[in-house]
Amino acid sequence: MSLLELTDVTRSVRLPDDRILHILQGVTLAVDAGEHVAIVGRSGTGKSTLLNILGLLDAPTTGQYLLEGVPIGKLSNGTRTKRRGRDFGFVFQQFNLLPGRTALENVSAPLLYARGRQFWSRTRLAAEMLERVGLGDRVDTMPDKLSGGEQQRVAIARALVRGPRVILADEPTGALDVETGGEVMDLLDEIASQTGAALVTITHDLAVAARAERQYRLTEGVLVPISLDTTSDWVGDVPTLVADRSARTERRLPEPTDEAGVPA
Image (cartoon, rainbow, N blue to C red):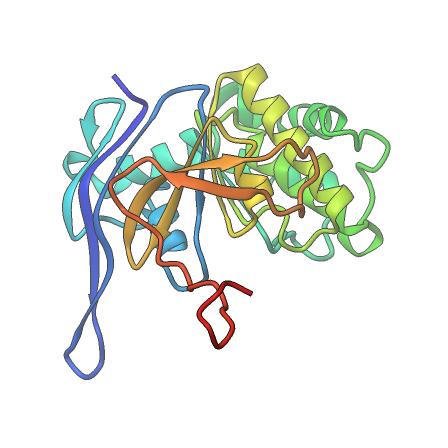
């Protein structure tokens, strides 16, 4: 049984002029515990909508989403909220740190909604998580005194402090330089591997996607398996899109020719 399983999921919204906008069309995806899956696509293709559905922030229009074998449609709003806070960690391109709060206070914030030992030990747990991401000496530092890479590390620590089963990363390297982005992906891969959490990365960067065990492309709301051919370890490099593992084919421009029709 997969940890997350979508079957023929669609998502549509009604526009102000009464037209229906179809964002996702028949998406099927299964993700196991401890697996890293990447989804690539241009802006406006529905990547963030898919992530919101996976993270219980939104619901499918049609189709089925099973979370550990349980249809999310059968969960009450309260249960869904509890599972989202407990089982999912979100990492975004924009770090979304609380201004005027230290790194420690930012990381401990999700534990204010925990119960029992996690709640009462929130300061210690936050400090340990900051140590784990390499910021043990920055616990009392304000976000505006941290570099971009350090801010993303704080955001990762905040996402992971409750020990989520699933890490959802939406363009986690988009605001970072190539070297720092590589370090952040190394960190996400390392922690996901150590904890057995599923890692789903939404990105437009093929080099980020190439790190995953499986890759997909989302085009016009349709999810298609792809294969990436790369030997690069650096985020920001552009590996080659080898082939879809589906029946879909790419439309390619014809090679330029001279007046006699011979390829230039």
